[in-house]
Length: 347
Ligand code: DAH
Image 1 (cartoon, rainbow, N blue to C red):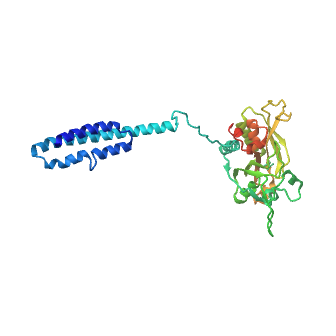
Image 2 (image 1 turned 45 degrees about the horizontal axis):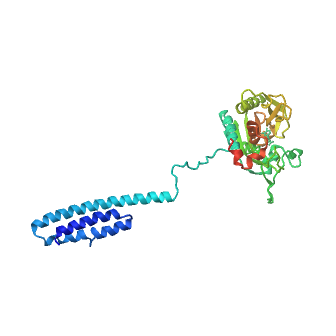
């Protein structure tokens, strides 16, 4: 059989068999049969040399064109087989790519953090600087230096968590019950004029109930300067109350005893539930207590080395949980730290 007719035969077979290839294995067998090193077409191309010159050109030309055409058809068929394999794999995996994805849970700030930031922003804008102090505190800063000596009945105001640690010559250690010790710490290391707010966690040995937690967040306010009076204190605290609870609130100052201030007072706002008429939220009084405050006791100023004849100061302490409860209408303080997402995602 001459080369030309073998070529034609190979051509017919190659095209016919290519159509029957259904998998990559079929295809690679087909490739070996026709285009591989020992394939039919390759054999023909190799034996061209033995032909007379005029035939060599026509057969060679035909053979090369067939080789290119088959090569191209092979690539095309391979692409199609791969595509079909992918489609059927996806179908088998039952992936519906048009289904919506899972929604991402987006975090948010805890209501106490939000309220704390608002309170600090308010004081910052009034010229106060934010400073912090330790949560584990010496008896001295938490009590003694604030004129609450050992065995003084005022200690009963703060149920204390003591640290079980004692060394000779060292004073007792505790978890601070309020942020007031930061007043002393700051005054010891700075000179007037002073305008600071000091936020932080405080701890109390407390049986929990809707208004008591063993951990709470306070912000301490302290200003010391020449000529500061009760009028400055009332001005700053009124501004604070109006910014946090709205400009329509009435603000009331009521005498109260705190050992480290003289005079001392509580600040109240008229109840926003009942507009001062008296309801469950305000216990029927029409007023809500929001913080404690007063003029820094001159003895404290003298103890930290200031001249109390020259300098006066005012101080205040507020509980962030209480402010947040009033602000958002929350009736149980324990909700803040139960970590229930249904509660937390409402803020
Ligand atoms: N430290 C007080 C408490 O925890 C709150 C307080 C009252 C702070 C009066 C003050 C103040 O700075 O002047 O109950």
